[in-house]
Each structure stands twice: as structure tokens, then as C-alpha cells.
Amino acid sequence: MSMAPADTRAFGQGRRLKLLVAVLTRQRPKMLGELLDSCTVPAGCEVEFAVIENDAEPFSGYVAEKFAGRLPGKLSYTVEPRRGIPFGRNAAANMAMKQGFDLLAFIDDDEIADRNWISALLARYRESGAMLIGGPVIGVAEVDQMNFWRRMLFRGIEHRYRQKAARNVAGFSNSKRSLPTIITNNWLADVELFTRHQLKFDESLVVSGGSDASFDRAVSAKGLSKAWAEDARVYEQIPPERISFRYQFRRGRDQSIASARRKRKHASLFPLITLPAVVLFRFAGMLAAAVSIPFLGGPALISLARSSGWLCGRLIAL
Image (cartoon, rainbow, N blue to C red; front, side, top):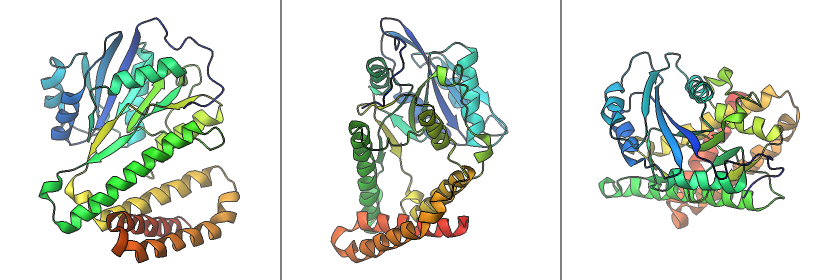
């Protein structure tokens, strides 16, 4: 499940790797604590944790202090006052470079790590030599506390996560398909991407978002290797406010706007030329989803919310 050509380095075979696990957070102390509590460290590597508060104040500093002596690796806590995810991501990359880490991993503050998460990422790195590695994200929620409507929507969200994971596995297994985008909700990178290849997260995307997707494209543009670690699972905690048609519509809209802006930066007319056909295809998908709601339930509802949000986002971007 990797992209050729692979790098010719030794991929850390037979040596002790030094890994920095970075968590960006902003005013989520409870979720941050649950994430840190889930982290385990395998033998044969040196792992440190970095919590980066993307806020003006050290809101979650007490959580980091609480776990500093409990984690199996050293934990540092810093504040990145420039608000925006790419600033926090670059702060983590700078830390990894300055402190001589071999690898940098990202996980979101609203996720829980599987016990084998770090070991599975490292195993995939050692066997593939890929410069950038991603893994599956599984949505979880307290289903027992939901009413019928939210339960149906959550089934649709679950279905979407499973579909995405299956597409990623297929994409990395089939050399004829374009490789899926690896984003920082489950992410491992060789630090040489920042040192030797001088990549960084695009800080101009602070408003629109998508600096991790842009980073992924830069890795692919350089012909560097990517891989997928199917066993490196993390679990995203989905709060009730996200299990709504309105939220899913807005999420699809915002992602569509961000995608259109990133494509416009490349100054290519191809996305604009093909837009009418893509819009028609999405509209047909919306109609199909609407008609199939009585038969498919939640998956059709989420498909309708995301597709209609995507169309709205493209119109706003235009």
C-alpha cells in the first residue's frame, strides 16, 4: 500500500527511532485528557508528546501538567498564539526539526488512540519506507443517549467513515488509482520532509483550511512515497451537535469552498471547465440520495446533506 518510487534510506531498520506525537488543541481539556490517557508506547522507539495550544491563553495547561508524569514518554506544552491550524502544525514541525526527531505524528484532540496506534504506524514506516503515512479514523458516539433521528443520522456518519476507509485501502492497493489524501487526524511523516525537502504547511490557508491536504499534494508533486497503515486506528468522538443535518451540510459546504480555493491557487482552467459536469453529477447524486432515504435511512440523509453542502460551497466559491 505504498507509492513508488520509495526512498532509498534504511527506513530506520535496526535502529531506535525518535518520534514526536503532536496534538493541537483549543479549549477542549476533557477530550485532550481522554486522548492522552489512551496513548501507549511500544518498545524499540523513543516517543515524546507535544501539546500545542492554539489560543492566546494556556487553557489546557493543567491537563498537560497532570499527564506529564503519567505518560510513557516526555510531554511538553506550548502555546501558539497565532490562531489557525497551520501555525500550530508548523510549530510542531519546527519542534521536531530542532530537537532531532526522526518522525512526527499528528492526532486530533477529539480522538482516542487505539492501543496499537503508534506501533502500527512505526511498523508500516519500517516496512514501506514511505515519507508520509496515514491511517483510518472511526467515528464513535454515545448511541444510547440519542433519539431516533440522531441515531439514524449517526448510522449515516458511521457508513461514511467506513466508506472512506475502504476507499483509502483500495486507493493504496491499486497502482492505477490516484492515491488518497492523507490528513493530520491520523498522520505520520519522516522529518526529512521538513529538513531535506523543505516542505511546510501553507499558512495562507488559515481561513479556508486544508493546509494538510495541500501538504499532501506537495509530497505527491515531489514524487515522494506515501503509504496507508490499515491497523493504525484512531476513534473520533462525535459530539451531539455534529450529529445533525445542518452541521453535515455546513461541513460539506466549508470543505467545498476550501477545495475550490486551493485549486484556484494553481491557476488551472481545468477545474473551471469541468465544473458544470461535476455540478450535474453532484445534483444527480442529491436526487438519488433524496429518493433513497425511505430505503437507506441515515447513509442517504448524510449523502444528501454533504452533496447539497458541496454544491452550495462551489457556488459561494465562484
